[in-house]
Length: 273
Image (cartoon, rainbow, N blue to C red):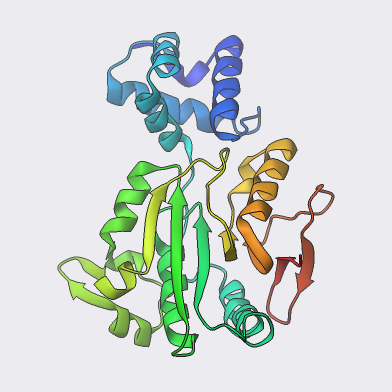
């Protein structure tokens, strides 16, 4: 099998162009080695002997293209990642939504966890919402990702002992069952979440969302793709709703309608109108 560690410039340009067109993910010379490494693994798994042959395959086979895009994404996550965001959700966002905005019509808060990876984020949100929402209120979460493999793990709701670091003991007792080798999320929490495949390059079809989490995702996009994704979030959100992005990400200088909100706990963005 050809060694793809030294992906030729022409081949690299073909792959990066296809990846960008299909997902918005940008590969540059800086992260070229990541693409080469993932591509090498993929060719080995599929027993394909050249990068050119594999490119021809993913150009015509949409299912294999999905698998390839899955293989190049980074899926680093954990429960209660960046605790400050969840503090802001509990102490600012939810009270603001309930008491100051939707107070005349208790109902269901609609939440999207975009780029949910293996499910730790939406399960964290679901546990927290279960704890803090008044009895008259309900919530529903859509959790999406471009990785089918990650979504399968998320739907299963099983996490090895090493993966439950960060979950408070009372949450672990209340919302998980101890099983052989790890912990399983309770069915009642799983029922609050709909896991779904979604490519952020496309419109999700979701509307009137109250809260959007899209953390550590747009960092992989160039400015044009970032703006397009953020503007699609705007279209999907209700008036006076809130959006969380990663602590290392920013909308500064981007042509969007979101307004920056600085709270005592974390910074976030708001759709006022």
